[in-house]
Amino acid sequence: MADELLKAFQEAYRNLELLPLIGQNDLERFRVDYGNDVIEELEQLVEDSPNRDGKIIFTGHRGCGKSTLLAEFSRRFDDRYFVVLFSIADTIEMSDVNHTNILFAIAVNLMTEAEKQQIKIPKSTRDEFYKWFATRTKTETETVGAEVSSGLNLLKIISSKLKVDATVRHEIKQEFERRISDLVAQINIIAASIQAVIKKDVLVIIDDLDKLELSRVNDIYRDNIKALCLPGFRIIYTIPIAVLRDKFLRPLLETETNDQVVVMSVVKLFEKGKSRQIDAQPRPEAQEVLCEILKKRISDQLLEHQTAEKIVLSSGGVLRELIRIANECCRICLRLIRRKPDQPVVIEDEILDLAVNGIRNDFAVPLGKVDYEILRKTYESFMPDDPKQAEFLDLLHGLYVLEYRNRQNWYDVHPIVVDLLKEQGLVNGT
Image 1 (spheres, rainbow, N blue to C red):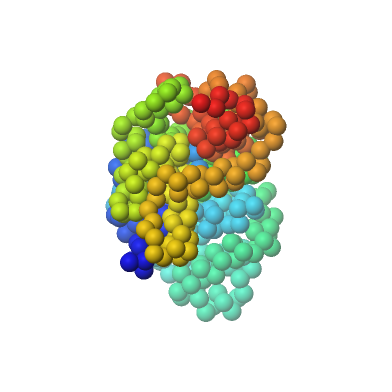
Image 2: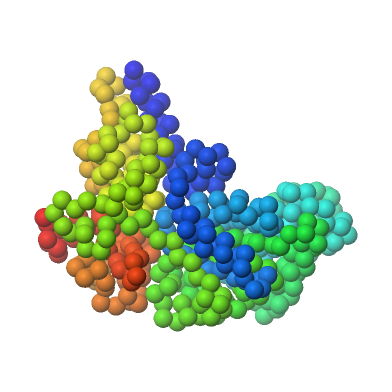
């Protein structure tokens, strides 16, 4: 009996990995009907753009489901476009991302996808591309000679260098920083060669740029958004939601992309102010979606229904937080089963309390006096004193504060962080 329970929780624990649903198998097993309005908005911008080189900015809280949605979106468009979806985090060391290596990564991933799909670019043209890549990444001539006939292997070598070799990234930056037009020209030649063969427009989607530190985002976009908009095909860039509060960056992004900014909101469990009421009830349609996500990943026999609803409320409507809390509950249960194999174990309120306590402690570690005051003000007024204050933007970026959308935007404090404010005596503890 204990072995069966252990295996059941192990399966649930694996199902609750904090990873987006990228693979077709995961999408089929776990996807729920969520975010279709955002997909429709992205589709409209891609399909109806007057130009074939439109750039789109896609944003939302970390963990709101953007990566899963982009994977689904790319599949829907695969028959109409040559779609290249890649994660910048899988391509470049995140602390070293800049506009030149983003553009270089686009070139590498264009060719990698072309090789995967066995697109028959003329051999002489393809070989010139490989030599160009090899020269710019200091790949040995012998390697080029051995691998140029099977370009995917060469591209894997170059991709690995781009990811792990800081010297290569520095050399790329040095070479192209003052000659960005040369790099863009090569990207456009690659894209045009692909389009000529398959008769489809190119669509590049770059995920995980929203996970960059805000200081890196400023360095990349403030002075270099024009360069990122130069390639002659459609690109979707992701950015942190806090950037939309920046009084300089937001209008810059809107101008350069012709106001093509799409925001993916978190699931709004309560209308503004309703969560403060005694016996407040969440919006049924929102609660049902999040409960369905849990149900697809955890057997009903392992999770009490009322506890599932409390996990939903503790998440604040953020998908990543929903999975994170349930994942922590599974970890606790797995330890309990091994400690007391003869006793039944199920995720109930006491287990949830233990999980939330651990997550609350993680939230508390970085907070200082200024942060607590911003959180208190946001909790009381659904708006900080200064939405552009750097400390507030950091709290927004770190999911301490969540943004919700009606006719007007408003903010609330993450439900688990609210408990910290109550412990500090900063808000009413009822």
